[in-house]
Amino acid sequence: MNAKVADRVATGVFIVIAFIIVSVLIGLFSFILYHGFQHVSLKFLTTPSSNMSAGGGIRDQLFNSFYVLFITMLITVPLGVGGGVYMAEYARPGRITNIIRSCIEVLASLPSIVIGLFGLLMFVTLTGWGYTILGGALALTVFNLPVMVRVTEDAIHSVPRDLKEASLALGITHWHTIKTILLPSAFPTILTGGILAAGRVFGEAAALLFTAGLSTPRLDYTDWNPFSQISPLNIFRPAETLAVHIWSINTQGLIPDVDAVSNGSAAVLILSVLLFNLLARWIGSLIHKKVTATK
Image (cartoon, rainbow, N blue to C red; front, side, top):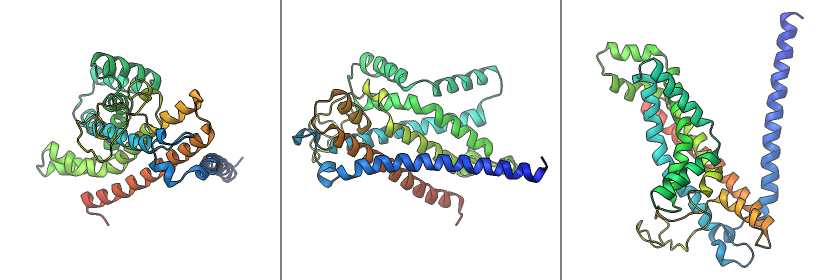
């Protein structure tokens, strides 16, 4: 087999693989949206589950999903980016650094159910908080932190070293070089890691079962006092997210229209993840253009 034939065969194989992947994704999304979108309505999105006779809406679960996501990323991103910067720029090569990197890789491969049991012990039992949004966010932070650290470290390593060396040669300090040269150049890759971590938060159920709980108190959306027991902003209240709600109604089987509610919830979950990804990439593109002065 000559070089041209081998090149064509390899090209054809990769095209077939790409076609299979795209077909599976399109088929999966089409199936979920086809069976679920017909059950989605304004009433379904804005009504609490306890206020409708057959299954109810997903207002509280949808809000809880975005709120848990916000709290989780508020903790994960600074810690993950800081850890990645340390591993890439400050950690000295050696046995200790290799051990830390190995621990991060092991932590990234832990099943979510194990993280949930750890969160149950640390953030529910030992703290005495019970099932809370904060406990769920901290458990998901442990779940996503290794991803952010490794993505940030790899993103900084991918920046051409000539940029760093030129900055240091001009007398700019190491931290200022990181802040103005390395992080802006690595921002698109770090943003991708953040989006992947956010997607895991949206779809996570096992870890939240043991930390955030399976119930949501009756919320008053006019009460924005974060210390009020009925305020949606209270981080010390239990919160059932959309992914947990889908699991709960399918396993308990207590509502008559379980298929309609679960299919509609799945469609809303998929659309929420898609819209969040598109919005995050658009905002990230604007930020990257601003910090790098590109058009």
